[in-house]
Length: 631
Image (cartoon, rainbow, N blue to C red; front, side):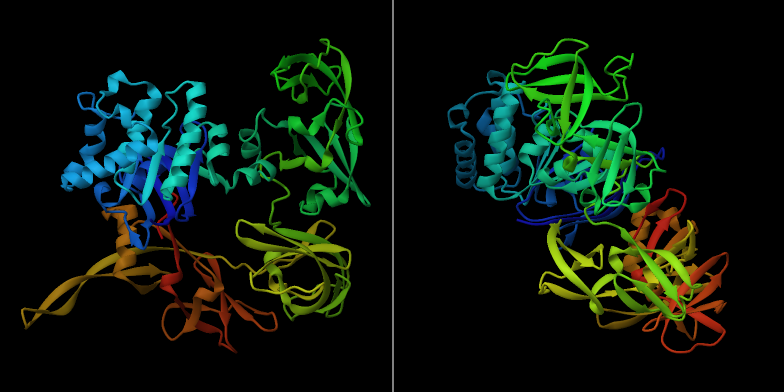
């Protein structure tokens, strides 16, 4: 058995089409992973790259501890089940299942034992002498599965294996495959376009669109915490209701107003403690989402009410779906109206066409997305929180504490808005706070902390013990201060970017062959950046060649690195110190390199003229022309 690592995987075809973009994921041993998304989103292409049936343009695929980018499919210890089953029509079930084992020259007795054991697990022992044409679709599907599991592979890949079956048989086979995964205790990766299959089978789901990962999470978390509007609409039946609107904070309440309707509801500020506060002043349009099951035709179920006009009702047996419109004056057909709403009602509910009914809404289940980017404005791990602050001399008053400002942060005295990234909050300072709660967010331990009247968030280690009262520290180089809507203090830029190339050349070398020393030449590689050259390890160079081809030499590359991955040295990129930043424990210099500025962590004083050396092993390298990451 094995785990898989997909590190920045790309698939770019010769015509420039990107089928898969920067796919990153760690798959644990014995997981059941489902790739789901609409047709053309790249899910099957990703599966085929794992199998070795498609070349990987760039990135690194590991199975266990081995990089398998260039390993033949037959040597990856992977079995694949295809959509069309791919059974040999002239062979019996037994022969179909045994065929791959015979090619591996296994003993006859071992083949027989493996085939019959797989047939027993799948319940097809009585069909071993039949030909595929004498079997139903579900039985053929089991044979295809049996042919895969007899190999006892490290990883099972299944590419939409149930799409050719009718609805009833698909439901039955979903259960069979889930039970099979439990019996075999191996890693399954399953591709489907059906979100019901994904939700009912996967331990984790990868939602894809246009070649990009939209979100990776458990079925429950995808339903409860969608990261963007696409995921929110794709997961769940019926699709989530969406409306355009605004959010306006008034003290401890936030007014949720829906455009083109009379709906304006006040929700507690606690519902928005993770929301980006810049959306709460009513100036930005947001997309408001709520699921059909969180709207009730019982006006007294929830304290928040609204009226809607009924278009029609669909009876589903277990419940009804009521199609209505929050805009009582709308003339749009229900499918086109931006204020259309679908409500789940009890079975047997009857409402007349055009009747106006009162519904109640569970506002604690509302979702909010940016109307342009469609990203959630309240992610599970908030990017930052905002609070009021006052500056007086070298002291910042915020979070019910007095904070000493470093030399690099000295704005004018007055009142400000202080933006604190979650990554800037640690448990090693002297700001008093109360521990409120914690949650597991995809393996990360997110703690909620109350400092003054502001809820902050921090990622802490799993072994950290938390008392009711804790002491916080704020990394001030990451914060932002605003006044009257203008940024007065910017955070330090911690992502440096430089353009350059990779080149190859021959160097003299001495090798030993058959006990004799021989002079020869070998290829060496260098990065040419900012007028300086840096040695590139051969392994890294080969990775760039694999991703960019032999034409990568001389092509424009983009190198990204942090201030901690570059240092002042005797040789390197010659430049000058343009600006010095003192944050107390850490000091940085800003140096121009061409048209770019590079921030560098320094240890002590440095002169005005310096040379910068890059930590080559820490570089993030992109090919500019195709916009893909190579390393």
